[in-house]
Image (cartoon, rainbow, N blue to C red; front, side, top):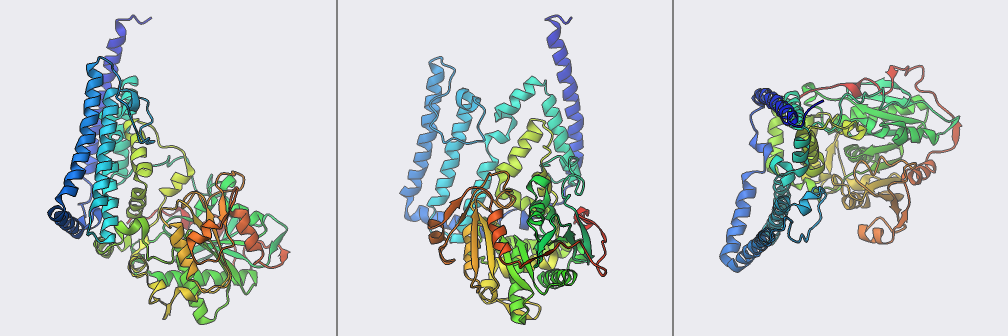
Length: 597
C-alpha cells in the first residue's frame, strides 16, 4: 500500500518522465518546422494597399477630427481602468472573487473559472474590452472605400480571435486543470498531436479535425449501392441501384462541387440525400470529379462544361433512352450548371428539363465574407502560385474556408488537440471537410477573375465555348435552395442571382442552418426547418417577409417539386446498359485518389 509520503515522489517522477518526452518532441517539432515552405507574402496576408489606405484614412481623421479619436481612446482606457480598479478592490477586501461581470457571454469562456476566479476573469474581461475597442475603432474610421472597410473588419476580427486568452496555455483554465490532473500527460499528448500535424503537412500547421482512421470511403461512408458506368479524364459517372419497382421517367443527374468530394451527399444511410432520392423513385446519376494534379493546369471552366456537364448529360440520355434530364448543381457546380444552361439556350438544346441549385452563387456583385480574398493582391498571388504548381492546392482552399469560421474550425480544434491532448473525434462531416481536392490552374483563375471579381455572368457576359453567356439566358424551370446562415453562399446573394434568370418557372426554398448542415438535413432528424413563399422572385426581403415556415427538412418540399417535372412512372432501371457496363462499384476510384500539389 502506498504511504502518504510516497505520493509526491511518484507524481514527481511521472512529471520528470513527461518533461523528458516533451524535450524529445520539441526537437521533432523543430525538425518538422524546418521543412516548411518559405512564406509567400502575396497569399499570407493582404497587400500593402490596404495598410496604406487605412493609415491615410486614420491620419486624415486625426487631423480633421482629433476629438473623435481621443474620445474613443478615453472610453477604452476608462473601461479597462474601471475593471482593473474593481478587481483590485475585490482583492483588497480579502475576498478571492471576481468583480461584477457584465458580459457579453461567449461560448469560448464556458469554464466557471472565467466568471469566478479573479485572475481568469480579469484576463477575460480585459480581452473582451480590448476586442470591442478594436472593432469600434475600425467601424469609426471614415473615408475608407467599402471594400477596404470590409477587408479591414475581416482581418481585424482574425487578429482579435487569434489573441483570445483561450488560445494560450497560461490563460486557459481547462488546459491547466487537465495538465495538473494528468501530471503533464495531457501536454505531452498535445505536443505529440502538434508534431504529428506539422510532420504530416511538411512543416505547415493544419489542425487535424477528425480521426483519419475512423472512416473509409466505400466502407462506412459513401456506401449507397451503384455502379460507375462511364469514365473520362474529368469525372466518373455513377448510376445508383433503384430501390423501388417503378421510377420517374426523367432521370436526375447531380453535379457536386469539385472543391470537395461528392460523398457529402452520402455520408451514412441516415443522412444520405443520394439514398433518399433513390427511395423516392428517381433514376439517379452522380458525377464524381477527378482530383487534378499539375497535368490538369490548362483545364478551364470550358473544359468542365464540355468534358464534364455536356458529356455527362449525353451519357445519361443515352443510358436511359430519354431526351431530357433534370439536373442539380451544388455550390460552384451550381454556378457552372447555370453557365451550361445559358449555353444550351444559345444552342437551342433542350436536353435539360429542369434545374436545381443548392447554395449557389451566380451574382457576385456582393462578394460577402470572401471580399477579403477576392481583391487583386490575393488573386494576383494565387495566379503566381498557380504558374509554379499548375493547380491551386487543396490545402490553400481548406485554410481559406477554415478562416471564415476560425473559432470553430481552427482554434477550438487546436485547443482540444494541442492543449487538452485529446484525439480528433470520429466525425464523418469533419472527415469529409478535410478530404479536399485541388483546382486546375486555368479554371481557378477564370473563376476568380471572370466570375468572382468581374461578375461577368450578370454584366457583360462570360465567354464559354465560342459564345458569350449571360444570366438572363437561363430559362428552364428552376428550384434554388439557399441556407439562412450560409457564410460561403449568402442566401440573399443566391436569391438575387436567381431573380435575374430568365425562367418563367422559379421556386426558392430557404433552409435554416449553413452551407452543409442546411443541405444535409434528412427528414428523420426534424432538426432544421425551411421557408417557402408565394412572393415573386424579385426582392429577397419582401419574399422573406411573406414566407411560410415549415418544420423539418426541405427534402420533401423539393422532392414534390421535382416529381411534378419528372414524368410518368416506368419500370426501374438497373445501372448501365450494353454500351455502358459496370466499370467498378460505387463510389468509384476517383473519389479515393489522394493528389498533392
